[in-house]
Length: 139
Image (cartoon, rainbow, N blue to C red; front, side, top):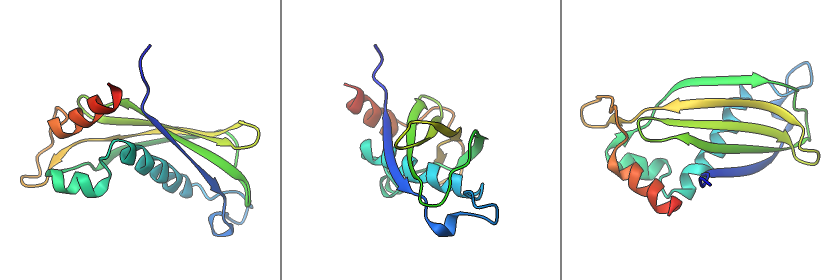
């Protein structure tokens, strides 16, 4: 069985995140994904400060989201981020669920690529610094 690298956070939807239709404004889902993605990176000891000092930047080059059901003010939601690919790029899958019921609300994924901070060149293979951290957690 393959070990899965994932992190999960819980959020209570704040008032400022809803729109005039009284549901979470669509752009806030990217922020929820980001909070879970940061928790995943911290579990690898490779959060943004460590990325910066490694000599590689990891811009998001693709963002995909599928809205299934709306989240609403005060609702407790669980956001899961799962590392799906890491050898040549970072592909992270996301699932947002209603915390009490587990009902699926939103799913999606992002893709990030390594870019040399010095030259700005895209790396077509993930740098050893990332591969070592993933191997350490998977072992």
